[in-house]
Image 1: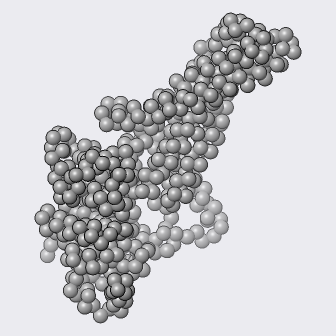
Image 2 (image 1 turned 45 degrees about the vertical axis):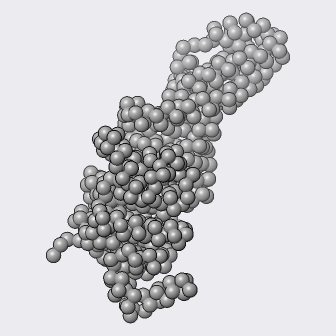
Image 3 (image 1 turned 30 degrees about the vertical axis):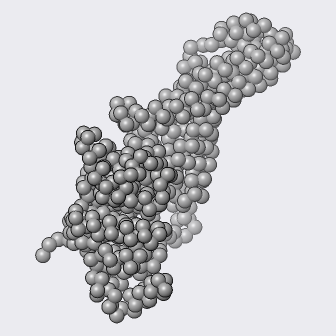
Length: 249
Length: 272
């Protein structure tokens, strides 16, 4: 049996005595797209932050390719982070750089590639997110959707094999949301990128995810393929699906 | 070092005593964290001067720190010199000793008021801007993004800002002394009837090398303190826009207090 690429092993995370994650366990296989869904404030973004040690567990282990992210040395952490692209909710682009320089930043700072090679990689990443036309623009001059796509280009430019998406479609119009959801699937199919996507967009998740994980009160409620998820007879899943359907109506 | 800091304790305090002890520990931990930021930044100073991208950031910070603050520093130091000359000059006139006005103004400025007013201006104009800029970056996840890309925020953001303040503060401190002396001269000539040549001769006669070096040392220390405080406050920001406001306010208050305290300590060490 293959070792999962990502493993949460009974992870508990407390803030001021309150358990935001309460014994969360799940795995993500290589090349898989896992959608993390659940009510707001239930620990989805906190889960994502554990994968790059922006947060460390109060107890339990978070493993990426067998390495305990919470306990590893800073050199090992750098190696893991080099494999991971992270798309923040707001894009997290540096305001004083244009889109091209933002995407080129990790290559210029962390590799010894010649500028011509950096330019080629950045052009490829921008083409993949359909943002080549806006490369000279500054973050303040482009829309929220374009900022997220620029953030996505930056996340994949280092040939990351894992990409973490923190609400990639929140605050976007339906057309841009569909574009982003298609990009997630396209990057997975064409580049084999393993993805963990925190989202409120269940319709989108059903389109791009291999499996859906529902978290409630920091606990895993259901983790199943899309078909199994919509047919699940667990009350919490039914309640979540009903709420989503109501929202769609 | 990691900038995305977590709270030290996961659980809520069990008693008021424990809460107080935790506040104390958190305060001491913040001091240690600020010291680590300064030490790690200092370790990056050589690479900041060598690396092309860091040099570009440093140049822009030198411009912000040195050139953009010149109008404020000029006005503050000019009026500091004028106030000093007027206050001291009126007392000297009672004893017919106006000829020593230049000496009195120069000694006050070079030893204390020059670096002090320069430090205040830098804390208010540059330190607050650094804390607000880095604080906004922190709450917008830009600093977390840098960390995930394995780009050290200390090397990339802190080192050029602290180095720029350290380099510019002594120069601005000296500039303050010159402009302040001129301001004193203007008041001496126009209000107190002192001859400008006599005023300058008296001032230059008291411009001791040791005083100059102590003044420059103070400005250097103030630059390092303002840089470290504002960067650590910016990096420590949380809780959105309110947090940015609080960090900015704290950076100015803490810098002011430390300028006063360290100014006294340097004087004590160098003159007693």
